[in-house]
Length: 479
Image (cartoon, rainbow, N blue to C red; front, top):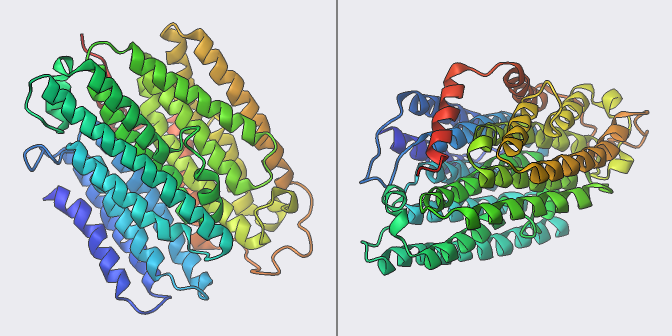
């Protein structure tokens, strides 16, 4: 019953929002159903329900980590939307409200799906439901970003489908019953055809990696993140990225259980380092603060993939960083949306005196910058420190050294963009288009997320600690 409610509640909200005619009343649906989904998520994580539909649907600790992150982030974004959308009365929010709730239902199904075919369908649904949201501003740049997002992600998801075909064929070649159920595939991984399993891994990594934004498959990200409203960017960076990462994790579980893991580990580490290098290169002289956040997302999926490839020693930090990165991206994108509305530009060179003009938003953006770059006392510092320590402890000092070097470059690049925005006086012409100032509903949600990030940086609740430990055990390679 809980599985049905988790997917149907936001779906019901989506259709309800479609039939509400008032542009002012419709956004109120979002926090109502966001809160209901969050309560259901907490209930499911506490109760740990048994699998359903012959194992097609299940909520294991890995799914719980991602679902908890998505639900928390969505609740914050829905509260933000209740303050943001009424101020955009010149544009209908019908499609945006419908798409946000539809995407929440699809993302939830991704976390519940233990049949890889069903997971693929849910993943494609997130792509389709998000595309109209990227186009919300309806200008030439947003339609270009939408087409890039649709075309590149659709190609990626098509390659992932080929990977699933190869995975199913690997069971057929091995003389086993053809299946795409996760548990039987993990249990019989040693009997799968190695060549077809390797091919499936590559296609699935490229497919889901495109959705994650792993370099060089990331080319849709700067445009989509830059042109979408801040709350949509938050869902893309903290929601859809984690869904795609969960897809990679499911493939990882099967491949790690096959025995010979060196090929998979080297590929993940190589792709991760390449992503970090791309991010560092484009971050150095980045003038668009929303595109800067897109490259920050490329960096962090790189860090996550490296930690996943290293394995056991880095896994606790890897899982904790899924939560931290998702919530911190929520702070940054929501704050960036406020800055864009107030200054009427995404050009960081034209944003000055941010702390003077928008003291709360500016403070949140500055705190988010320090958090996402791994500075104490924020929780991303703990997760990144844990991952790097695990990589050193796993006998890969060169990889850890490269990570630290690239992180230092990225910190300097982001600082070169963010810090000048805070200083000086706001230009007189700033805000002549919108005249936005800090408001409760557009500041309170990112402030609440930042409070969570700060608390997790100094204290980790025991239930969360146990959940992360259970999830890490699922990813450990067994002899």
